Image (cartoon, rainbow, N blue to C red; front, top):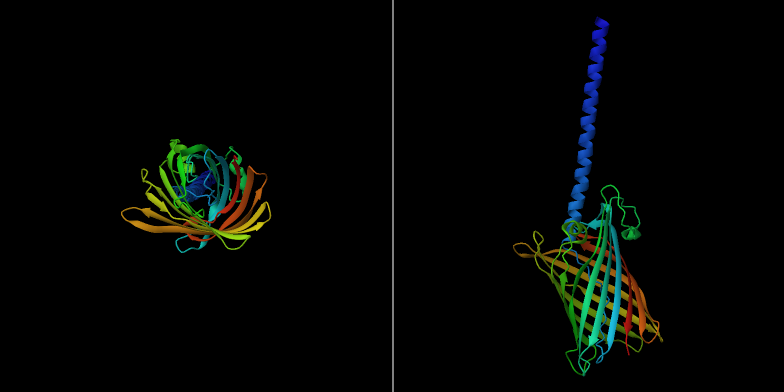
Length: 318
């Protein structure tokens, strides 16, 4: 009988120990998923303020009845983020986005000073649980675990390009407004919120010599409040130092400072990033040119440390 009692007690203690072990494992698992969920929440909060600008734009005001078509593409990816002190920390995830803009512009004024246009914007986005995954997986719709993926045509809208001073071909103003297509809530969690954006840009091209010139771009982009997402104001300042290799190639270095302001009760300077990079533009023919460049976010606050790969093709009728 004593042997049976000892055996029974041993089995009972083993079961209790197993139960405590299972509880501890469940607790560890819960803590793990809470950490992952917190990272996803942080990413979603960042996305609510993220509407990256592709710095390269066309500053050429078209002639009367001339048509320009530009197809912009930008792949950005990050597995790190800079905190409030500007320190680079691991996300524990990989965030990748592929932005595409199809831009149509048409010359409507006989004095070649005013153009109208239309922009169509699309995004593919992936929040990958594996921080070591390839950025090219942004083109892979298959996900496992807690990874997320979405793609959509996100917005469209009219645009104008204007040369305000008759005798000055160096200064151009461009402005647009983009309207959301109304993507579902599930896609908003990856691609960012549906909201209207207003964009105004001042573009200036200053020749420095026969082969070297400085192109500067000051932008103001405003996104209205959307649900719990605050209003946002982005004021990027970009500069291109370019060198012409006759007759078809331009090499350039790029500097881009992007301050971001948000409005809760008051406007605050909440985050920024500073990018540097370089690229090349090649004139394929009289009607076609291609532009490619790379930038890296080297400094910032509350902003992901993105690597940016950009490629665009431009067609202009004669």
